Image 1: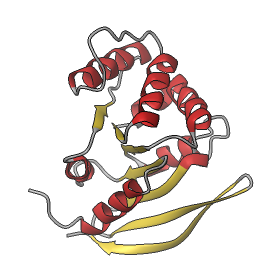
Image 2: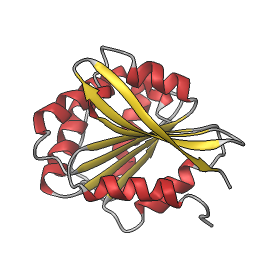
Image 3: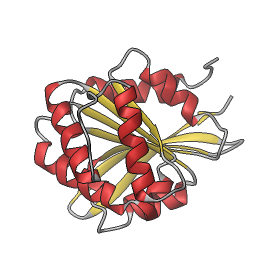
Length: 196
């Protein structure tokens, strides 16, 4: 049963309604309800959900392709040999129809599949004006997500992040609106939401 995440769900729905490229980071300790929030959000949407594995890039790539095929994103004839080719296809598809992509446990891709993030930035830039894609990177801990996705100059993902949802056990959920100005990333006006 899904309870007590209406503020967070509302933020995701608001970004989804923009019908453009938006990227959200969802972070919190294990078993705090990140996956339940994402599953609730994905109901009745054309979506792809992938839980990354603590494994090699090739294992994650094969699992990603298989799971998205099983979820009906592409037919049995599509075969992908690289993150570049699969993301090229996915991003192009998101210019034709509204899509949501969720990568849960994204921290497993940081070291094993940096080429995922390179390809992501490449196709986000290429199709930026035509994209109708919501991307949610979910994982823990926030410090690792911040180090890789927000502070790593090579990743270039921070340029696409619209919001951050960070949960702290026993405290509050914090939203930050990501504002871009030149090469700086600002987190402005945190809004505290009690955890139930």
